[in-house]
Image (cartoon, rainbow, N blue to C red; front, side):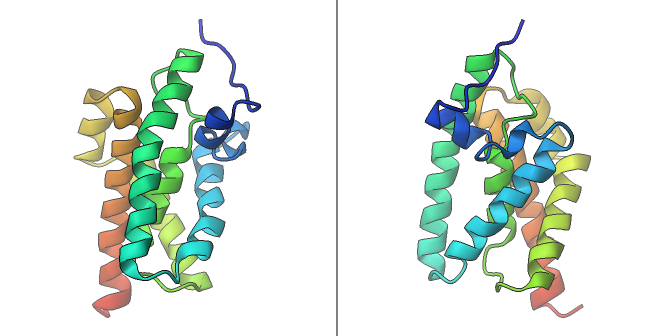
Length: 156
């Protein structure tokens, strides 16, 4: 039997995407929406600083997602959405802040995260703990990033 999340626990609160993961339907979508203001806050940083912040978020995410999953006794509980936040941030690397990039990035990330094409599906099935929770969304973010680069920088 699984336990309940404690949003009063700051680590669980972060793992739950500031509470957005507790949405009764589509918690991953709400978690991804929580990433948009974070992207807007750091998008204008130099690339090296953006990547440094993103790396800290990803490394920290392995810990907080693993901690929250263990706290409720569920391998990858849908309410744990920090991984969606990091995945979206990967999608948006080197993207300008505007409605088009924000929306297209959102849709592409959700597409890859929901459908889980290979290798995302393989990672999702084989890896457990905080690393497993994070890595499949990070790969989805990389795949969405690649498509974003093709759309916005290769001028299809």
